[in-house]
Image 1 (cartoon, one colour):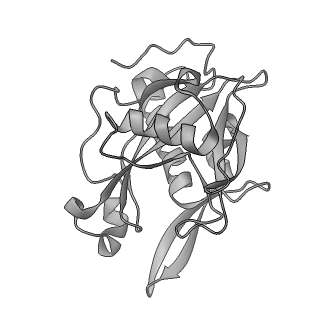
Image 2 (cartoon, rainbow, N blue to C red; image 1 turned 90 degrees about the vertical axis):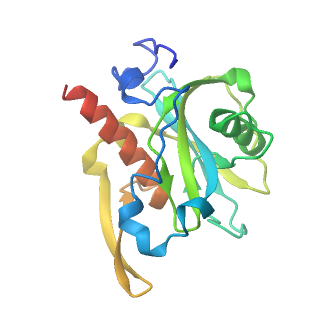
Length: 213
């Protein structure tokens, strides 16, 4: 069962606990965005399973979201802003364990610094992954120790900024001869776009659905 979230822990999201899928019941399906990129995807059974950690860090001036910038020389997504995470390995108990393991390997957090709360909807990518985002509280006292082979920078962005619809833009690009919509936050310090922006949009939309009830 999803752990109860103390109201003061994430003041920007009073309905966070009910907005997320429970940890014990991961959502099924190929991905909420599949229809948008169906012509670029591998068959569902060929998609690699991956997990990322959407870490919420309590700060004195409000919660923030833990993000990384990938090392520029990486073969996939080099130099891009992303959540810590990666492929679910055979030794992982579940997607939550995979997200925690990957966060430790990439950023240096230990499991005791991460409190999983629930899951967002799965997202599929044109690089062949089905990503399940794990939302968690992160101990504000963590010290980032990024693995330079994978992570060039660890930083935080205010959650209020990321939940404000005015800060999310949509751009249309031609990809393989067809127009594609790509989301990007209007954030001067880092380029937060693509799958990372889509996951944050999913968080906002699920919260908005709860607020409307």
